[in-house]
Amino acid sequence: VAGQSIALPLFMETFAFFFEAIFLGIYLYTWDRFKNKMVHFWLLVPVVIGSSASAFFITVVNAFMNAPAGVTVVDGAITDISPFGAMLSPAMPTKVSHVLITAYTTCAFALAAIAAFSLLKGRNHVYHKKALKMTMVSAFVFLIGSAVIGDLSGKYLANYQPEKLAAMEWHFETSSQAPLVLGGILDANNNIKYGLKIPYALSILAHGLPNAEVTGLNDIPDDEEPPLWIHYLFDIKMGFVALMVLISVVFMLVLWRKRHLAYTNKWLLRAIVLAAPVSMLTIVHGWIFAEVGRQPWILHGIMKTSEGATTSDHVDTMLIVFTALYAVLGFTSVRVLIKMFKSNHVEDEMKARGIEEGDGQ
Image (tube, rainbow, N blue to C red; front, side, top):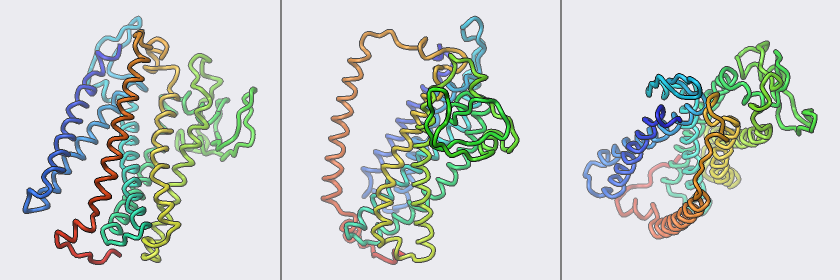
């Protein structure tokens, strides 16, 4: 049903992936081929463009599923197709920007964790100090951007998917001055126990005004309500975000006031190492929240997930095959990378190239 309208970005994603992969291969295998190292460095630009374009195109497809556009639906059939209109759905700006900046954030924390782990192991080379500073400052900046885009995402939901916003916050009665609910447990009668309600916060998130009216679940048809357990997912995700914000803010303060402690304080370095898997878990929880939260729709307002389910008899077999394949690839990659980095320390390589340590502060 959707293939005829949203196939273009799926097709373009393949080109973006190969563009990224080709230049990454060139970069990795031409380390010693350029006299001017900046020429070699610039090979990373197409890698960034390709990987970001890949994320852009695939997220455009997901945005179309959340807010179909560029098509007319007549008697359940899609007509008057505009491929570029489909790509420019109302969900596209917030979806794409949120996916990109959170991916950058996760990469920053992952790289920071490697530098922090090296410093914890006593490898006090300037390389690791500079790497830690650069990646943690980047993570801090990306987190600020994520907060801004998160606010815009809330306003998108209020206008285009109010049922998802209401289920996320257990907001049942349409009302103004709506509170934001943190934590809590929902009983069988839809009463919230042990939750912390922040007055006016949901109205501000939804429409930017404390007195704004927010649609409640009681005004949504029962067969179109998302699962209410997405509230727990959202709370867990935001708990992870709060932890990452805390770690990055503490690092920035320490870097500002007592710079040497940013590279030597073991508790801070351990927290940075912890932030890497936390950032990964944040993305996982975010995607589960996003996809479960738009249920029961696979194409919002057009087709329900139950109608789009495959009739193939071999889905289970393919799942097992692909799971086994990725398990083998994952295990092999980890073994190769561990052996590679244990046998080739960056300090030794820099010394061999005559690069002085310099000031890591």
